[in-house]
Amino acid sequence: MSSRWTVCGFLLLALLVSAARGGPLNERAREMKGRLVGKILPYWYDTAIDNARGGYVLADDGSGKPQQPTEKQLVTQTRMIWGFSHAHIKGLSDSKRNYLKAAEQGYRFLQEHFLDKQYGGYFWTTDLEGHPVDARKIVYGESFAIYGLVEYYRASGDKSALLQAMELYHVLQKYSHDAAHGGWMEHFERDWNPIVDPKAQVIVELGGAKSANTHLHLMEALTELYDASHDPEVRASLEEALKINKTWFYPEDPAKSAFHRFPDWQLVTAPSSAGLSYGHNVEFAWLMVRAEKVLKRKPSWTQFYAHLDHALKYGYDNDRGGLFSRGFDNQPATDTDKVWWVQAEMIAALTDALKHKANPAYVQALDKLLRFVETYQADPKDCIWHDTVTADGKPKSPAKAHNWKANYHDVRAMVKFIEAFGPGFSERRQGSPGGAG
Image 1 (tube, helix red, strand yellow):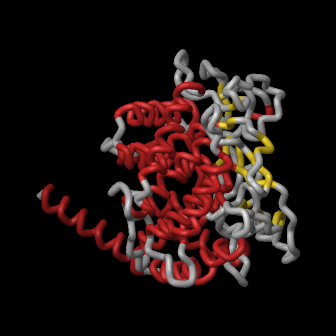
Image 2 (tube, rainbow, N blue to C red):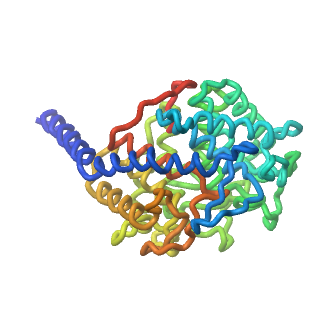
């Protein structure tokens, strides 16, 4: 009798998943693919490539008026390399827009101008021509260099890109890894002399501390580097990063998530480090499962759903759709702005949740979130998402492209959603057989 009910249960689950994929999400995926292929990726190709000097210039404040940028930033450059490489892998290059070529020129600019050939690692910013402006080494940015290099290797088959990613990994292990306490220190001068003053202007996170943000993206980068290289040292580092994130920054109880910890993992209790980010929590959830799958471990679905359900309970706008920005422990959100990348990571997390098991509440939340983005966050002319809107969808920061906003969070989430519920893509992977996550 129990085996009959088990079989029936599996059949019911299959029917529910099929219904979810054949319902409103299926139609939204088809529409999203049309926008991604026809407008969104062409926007990035047509506006961001610096054909005169190489690399990318992102400066669109949403006003329609020409902007005059003065610098290029490591995070932007490497995220754009990742985005164009990913688009090519998904078979989206054509005779008019070759996304591999777009990634290739960015890769060359990165190697020629951002790579520090004396001390190793990559500069934080250069001017438009490629001369270093801020030569410091910030591990948050170095993580995206690894991430972008691996994806370019997968798209192009150029083994030098993978070798550069491995070289950067070894540089980080030499200078940034904390052998005493585990994890990685995050801020350095050009010569890798540590910056430990908490009052230092370190651009990203907090000087002298370890951050959830950096360790999350380092785990993300190590996942893809290990998937492409199968290097045992990288595997050990990925296992360490995974454990650190699951233990100290995004624990089983999401209410105890932390932004910053001291090198010995004691909690930073300053008011500026208090609270949690719903976007980072759900991003961690799906990246954790991705890392565990690459490591061929049993995924921690219980911890995944704990973070997703916590965000839905305390940070989700049930009236209008969309995920708020920040809050504290098990209380309603205190920052109700809706930021583009937060919506993207919630789309990615809900997509993976529904791929794993059917849940009508998740279908409803995802559908409502997509409707909010399409109605209030995306510009109807080119479908590019504005940086930030208020809870009710009024523009707050209408920017479409800048040093922190490239074709990464939202394009990645769209691809995941389309592949889960829509027509999918014809891949052109030329490098490692591993998945792109």
